[in-house]
Each structure stands twice: as structure tokens, then as C-alpha cells.
Length: 497
Image 1 (cartoon, rainbow, N blue to C red):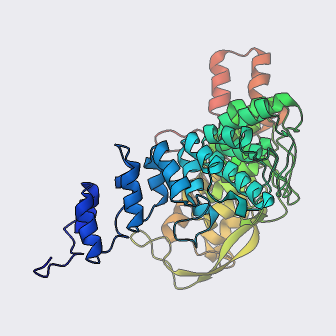
Image 2: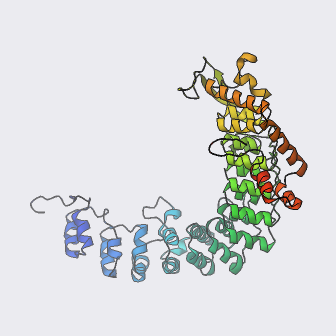
Image 3: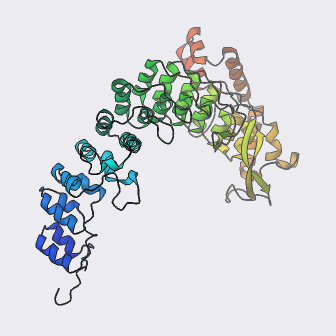
């Protein structure tokens, strides 16, 4: 140093001589460097608070302006915490630098990380707790309770409720009680609040969501059952936007919870004010197993139509389950809907791009987007086959044609020479030619008759085909044929019957 060495020089890790002296607990070296004007804020107090416990060294570091960060409290021994609180008089309710607020304070950090004994000490041995009004302290304990629940710290949640006075029915900025928050974040805490504390199970947040909604959203099968057993929250309760717990489970793709709700009497055909039902939500979430569950067990209407292309604050591509499935190019969900007797020609409102036809479209090598450009989206009424072509879902379009849908409306699209130019989309020549061949095949071949026969059979037996076949006591191979080859059958990439 007397030769002019820089007291704040850094090694390859960015550590200064003072940091090395602190890590080695060389008090004399630290004092010399401090007197020489070195920077001490770069050092970490956790090195002093780490084992072995040495309160006197902690005092020395603090006297040299070594900052105490939030994570440093987590490394401290309880004896050293007493030093920080009672001797150094650090306020655990304030962040180190004073401008981040209570949410970034050491107290909230320890609530999140654990160590209930330290959390309790920060309150019982707080050096200046008298400066806080009673209402302010209550708000802090309530906020800490929500933090503990979000961090899945049941131990700290119990401490805050049982010893520090946090309120069981306090509310966060979304109007949720601790129990409602726990239903969506931590099942053990939810069970503790419900069974041991006596939380209000029927509470509703500012969006009208109940504990059943939150449990369904998080996929808590056992908790959902426990809430239903309390019989204080209706299985078909609506939130402010009309969502039922079943819709929430469908949106989150929780098959087991959806099954529990249906078993408890959930109505799959309840609708939001815009006409959205659980089946719409399940199809939009691309949850094929739930779609089948709703159709088979929930006996949902496969032809439900919404009145709007908005669901909550989100836009959706179509107004019927089948049209939504087509927008996702999901053959599997389309198959479930057809198996439930969905109307293959039911038109509905869809959101499509405004295509402007340009020059003729070449076939083969160029992309499907050749020869057209798109503007902003607009709403139109389309049949399933029209929407499949507009969505460029060629496999779905072929499948719909092979299931004997009405093709008259798309003939002009596929062969402009016989009618007007395509009103929505210019179909690439190769796809148009292939779909024309499929239409011709289905219009003239014996397959057309077999399709019509099976459609008539379904109309006679209704949607519960499997149950009706069992009652008829038909041979097993006949039942399998009617069930698995009904309407269409995909094999090796083809859709031959």
C-alpha cells in the first residue's frame, strides 16, 4: 500500500482485498484497508454471519459499513440475529436501501425462505416496532401470510396466524382470502386453513371465483373433493364472467378434476353470457380426453353455438366446438365430436383473414400461401368444410368430404371455371384438384351408400351408440365395426372405410 497499490483492485472474480480479508476473518487487515479508504459495500455480510457464530465479528463488519442483504439474514445464527436487531437496531421491515418497500424487506424474504424462528424474532425483538401503527402492522402480517402461501411455506403461515396475529379472512389485491389463494397454490395450507383454522370455504374473490374454481384450476383432485363434501360451494357456481369450475378445469386440461365435477353433478351445457360452454373451452385447450369425457359422461351438446368470438377478454377463432377443432387441425377432437353426433354441416361464426386473390396459384413446389396476401382478420359465417379450406387444413377437409358433408358451397372455390371466383381464398391448384377427386369419389362410389347407412343408424340410435349396441346384444365383431368404423376410420394415413 505504501508503494501505491490500489486498495480496491479486483481479482478475476471481481473480489477486492477487503472481500478476501472478510472471507478469511482477518480483522486487522480489514481495519487497515478500511482506514486506507477501501470500498466496503461490495462485501457480503453473509461471510461474517456464516458458521462459526461470532457476534463480535458481525459488529465489526457492520461498523465498517458492510451491508446486510436480505439473504444474509437467512445465513445468520439466532444469536447473531439478536445482535442485528437489538444492538445494531436494523429494521427487518425495511429493505436495505430503503426504497424497495416492505415487499422487499428482510422480513418478507425470510417468510418466503423459511426459518419460522427467525420470522418470530423479527417481530418479538423488533428494535423499533413502536414506530408502526397497529393497522400498519396488521397489514404487514397479512401481506406476509399471502407471501408464505405463495411460497408454499405452511410453517410460516401457521406462525403468522397462530402467534403473530395475521387475519384468517384478510384479502389481497385480487380480493382473495388466504384460503382462496391456498386452493390455487398449496393444498396442505388450504387443508390447514379449512380444517384447523375454520376459514370461510364459501368465500368469493373480486372476480367471483370460488375455492372450487381455484382448486379446479390448479388440478387439486383431493382438495376439489373435500370442498364439494363441505356442500357450501355449488358445483355449478358461476364466476362474474360466467365460468363454472368445470370450465376452469377444462381450460387447465385437468381431466381427473373434470371427472370429479361431472360426477358431483356439474352441468356440461351451462353457458356464459356469450354462450361459451365447457365443450368450447376443452376443444380450445386442445384437451381431447376431456372433450370425450364431456361428450360421453357429461352428455354435452356437440353443436353448442356461442354468440360471440370473445371469451372473457380473449378472442377465439370460431363459435362451435367443431369449428374450433378445425382451426386447431385436430382430427382426434373432430372424431370425438362426430362420434357424438355433431352436425357436420352446421355453419357458425369464425374469424378469418381477409384474403386478397392475386395471380394464379402454381401447384406442387410453391407454398400454400402463394398467390395471396392477408389483411386484418374479419368475422364470417362458414360451414365446417369451408372453414377447413380457409384454414388450409387439407387433411381435415378431406375427412369432412369422406364423411359425406355438403360440398356444394365449396365447388366454386375448387373449380372457379364452374362458378364465381373464390369469395374467401384462392385454393392452390394441387389441393383443389385432389379435393375435387375426393368429392367425385364420394358422390359416385358405393362408399357413399355405406356412409349414408351409418349416418341413418346413428340418427335412429342417438348419441349413446355404445350403450344401445350393448342392449341389442349384437355379436362382438359387429359392435366393434359399428363403433370403431363408424363414420370414418383412419388407417395408414388414409381415410378409407
